[in-house]
Length: 474
Image 1 (tube, helix red, strand yellow):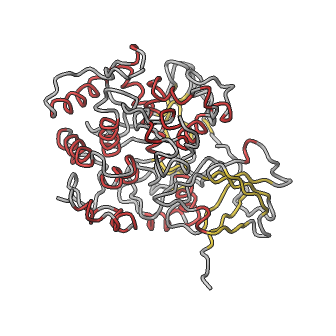
Image 2 (spheres, rainbow, N blue to C red; image 1 turned 120 degrees about the vertical axis):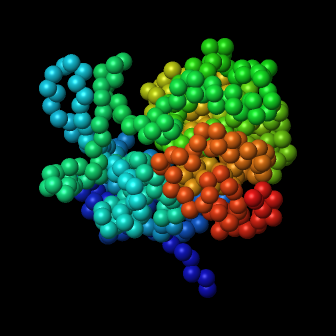
Image 3 (cartoon, rainbow, N blue to C red; image 1 turned 90 degrees about the vertical axis):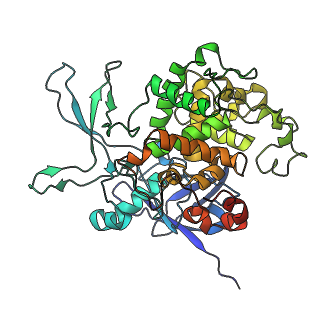
């Protein structure tokens, strides 16, 4: 008899105590499982039920409650993927942050400090070091909420947010003064008076700052020049449905910066890897919609159609590639639509707040076309896919390791334009002196790619496709 591997979820209240016998609903790619935890606030599942694989992405949501914590909108966690390498995770309540502010001395736009629950990664930090410094429970909380594992590299200056409702204790400095490791400086926006995060600039690199319009122009010019193409217009293909007002470098820069902030694409390596992939996926920033008809994605024409929820003839063209990362298949559109309904105010300029996931799932309403027609959604959907949508998990992590092989597979799913994707990244790394970035923490040579340096080398997929990968080895 074969023993099944069991994974567990432990439900904790806002004081990090187990919630005995609480009720729960676990949603796995839209399928709901209900039940009740044991006396220790724990429930166990078969590993295959909850763990994603290279061929099947599993997006999870948890709702849990009891008499003390009634079922409300705060009972549901954010969507997450089971963290790689973890057999047990903790779900915490409630779904809120506690933000403490100091008093305002005057109303003359004086900078004001806020405290917020996150850990700022320092130079030399390691997971084992953090466990000794913060404690195992805190590190597990950081991993769970930030969807990371022990194999992920810590990047200096990155912010790892604690789970919602998590409280951190104040630490003492060498001088004996009390500080809080989760403090961040914020200033009031000149536009709306609300606090906005101010990230320090690190030298002249791209880390933790917005791009300027000229920088984006120069990046595109560099890539076009490398192909001996002196046409520097963007989104000019005949099939591109963007409005003329969206076909400008100013608008592109605006949306790139918003997306990079939202999905934590915030270091040099993360940015150049993302831009290289988006440049290729949009046919060198000429269009936001796949050129082909999409018929090849129809059921009966593609063996993967049904499992990707293309269940009707016509779903192929309806859910063909759109946006900066060419979102494809109905299952991915629905997952992205669900994501937009969690912050309806953010998407309200394009999608009415009254629209629900159910209404957006209605094929007759053609919400799918918006991903190609709105530059905001085109770039935002690319960021969502990069951070949350790929079957290979958060692509910020392989970007931190300069793992182009994993990123290529994570974006494309195969070997289409594999060499070109490598070429674009190498070009950007060289021309923008990424080797001088202060946040590089690599165990390999920057911009040199071999399967042996990729995390894919240890996976079933990497071993099955070893011959293909090694064709691109240097």
